[in-house]
Amino acid sequence: MSVIIVTWNCRDLALRCLRQLAATDLPGAREVILVDNASADGTVAAVAAAFPEVRIIANPENAGFASANNQALAQVRGRYALLLNPDAFATAADSLASLVACLEADPNLAAAGCRLVHEDGRHQVGDAGWRPSFASLSMHALGITQFLPRHVHGVFLVRPDALGPGPVAVDWICGACMLVRMAAMRLVGGLDPRFFMYAEDVEWGCRLRAAGFGVAYLPHTRVLHLQGGTQGGSASTRWLDNLVWLHCSLNGERSLSLLRPILAAGFALRAGAYRLLAMRPGGAAARDRARAMWRFAGHAWRLAPRPAG
Image (cartoon, rainbow, N blue to C red; front, side):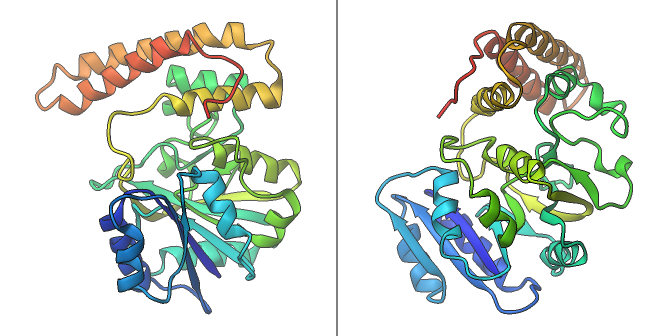
């Protein structure tokens, strides 16, 4: 199998990821392909010196996450490819092997992923989910899926402990740690390069599902993801732009005029809830979440049926 890592100015994380990967149990022979998007921090030289066995593709400019992964996917000759972020680390030696076993057990599965967690062990929302329909986007913005995770599907999977032992059938897996069956990839094509970053994995999963393949999520297999570790700064709104554009591409644009106020109201309500939580001792995290929700609420009014790039 092949492991694909896309880097951009994250030398130390890339080296840590490769060290962790070397200690991880993966069945059969492996190759590692690192695609660097014009890093200015010496990532390519550092990786070449420390891991000469890694195949490096050094892009002269930042091609984006989707296009960079496609460059590596075009060179994969094995049965499986693991898309792995440089800020994602297996927390157990057999975590990645569990993904391989999942695809081996069901030939109709095109992709498998696992629970992504923060450093404190909390579930990281955004590791898997369902097609971005009017209902799933609305349920996410309003936060209803938190209360009925088994019965109400939002665009993002929440509370994985409530979903049983798994595998759980989902529509997409986060590209930070996703194992893909290459036969399925060759049938439907690679990631959509129109998505520079964010929601390209959602679109890919929906395309695989539309082709008749299954996508599986393993809620009890964990991988640490230092979310935003390769980017820095505050939470981007590009994910929302791209999800709504994907929604319009899949379902048409007629619902957008109604979807905008629902998203804005939902995020505003959640911002208010976080503000209340922030009044408790140690409420710094809740204050940060409130600010993010207010930003998403304001941005929702300006959503358009076009890609954010």
